Amino acid sequence: MTALGITVALLVWVATLMLISIWKQIYNSWKLPPGPFPLPIIGNLLQLDLKNVPKSLTKLAERYGPVFTVYLGSQRTVVLHGYKAVKEVLLDYKNDFSGRGEIFAFEAHKDRGITFNNGPSWKDTRRLSLSILRDYGMGKRANEERIQREVPLLLGALRGTQGGQPFDPTFLLGYAPCNVISDILFRKRFDYTDQTGLRIQKLFNENFYLLSTTWLQFYNIFPNYLRYLPGNHRKVIKNVYEIKGYTSARVKEHQESLDPNCPRDFTDRLLLEMQKEKYSAEPWCTLDNIAATVADLFFAGTETTSTTLRYGLLILMKYPEIEEKLHEEIDRVIGPSRVPAIKDRLEMPYMDAVVHEIQRFIDLLPSNLPHEATRDTVFRGYVIPKGTVVVPTLDSLLFDNQEFPDPEKFNPEHFLNESGKFKYSDYFKAFSAGKRVCVGEGLARMELFLFLSAILQHFNLKSLVDPKDIDLSPSLIGFAKIPPRYKLCVIPRSDV
Image (cartoon, rainbow, N blue to C red; front, side, top):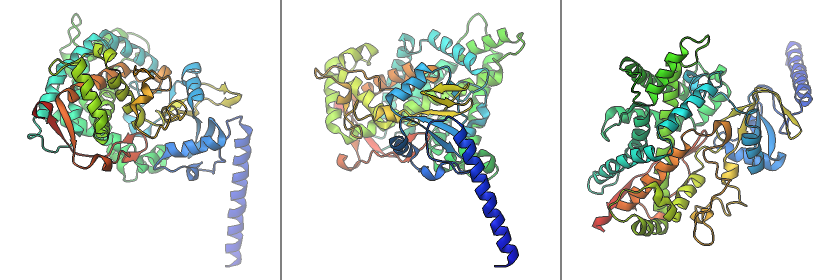
């Protein structure tokens, strides 16, 4: 090596040492929770397995405790692990940590809508949306009737699967929750062969999958570096804009036919609110915000319930003895022909327990959606600066081995007492809690109970492989836990 080369190498080495030293001084000056020391630019990525970040966070919690700091690139992130810490952040400090950490793939929804909105309009948008949803029976009788109207149509589609031939249930099951939320939003439903409904489901399903890939997690950590590179982030962003384009078109149609004296649905009610707001100095209820809000509800109301149903059927095929117990309970309480009702849940503790155990076991959103500190906050003696991303991990509650013995195994008895009655657990936070709790929790719970009860009332599930060979492991773990693709047969119980 030449003298010039040696000099350059020494200068680079000294500069690197100085950068690390300065970075370390800044890092140590904050009264943050403990955590691994981050490197410049990449942060703590070397301590994380991007194919299973929740598992990596659990290992870090074992070392650093229930409240610790990691850096995702340059983004300071405080992770809460375990019941006490998660509950404290979501409920006791719900105002301090009610912001939304940015998910850059949803740039079309930045500061708009409900789910991904971290702007000044999110509180008003969420408050108004909840008020309208309550008026339209969210979690109450009106939604029960919507679901019950959809039940025979779902059963008819299942009967039409070519005489009990194998089929992929992904989109057939998806039409049911898609139609329920579509009726709330637009007073519209899709036939089970409708290509527009199928296209929307494919967009939802593809995004849910891609968001859990390693590349999309890299993108959400380094958006400025990766934005202009080829990759699946472009597909997700394109899909988000297409979904929003669909909801924008529906909103404009509603605006053109709006009758202020007779609002038809959720969208009409938001449009009426926009008319009230147009004279205010800073109107927040705009057409763009309405389209984003409707898109948020459409996506969440379709894909999460659809995925849970699909995963649930795979689990029941793995454990045919559980399916048989459900058949017995359904036959005793509901009978062969009456449409299931929510009142049946009181007499069906085993079905109730199975529905809860499915949600616990599949752990759909293991790391929750990211929160953000809205102001400098002292939490357990640490100072968490405004703008810090906060991750209240849901898997640390759902897989708590004290509350749910042997949590890695599917066991409905996790939600049953010694007398066989349903047993509620405060650790069950599948929908999160606090200011950012899922707005559709009541609807989703109702759909899962009624749709699963109706399917098992009329059909036996038949796996294409021996039940003991069914692998319940998710195909991807990232933004969500994605169930493996599979085929099954549904055999009418009247034929057995």
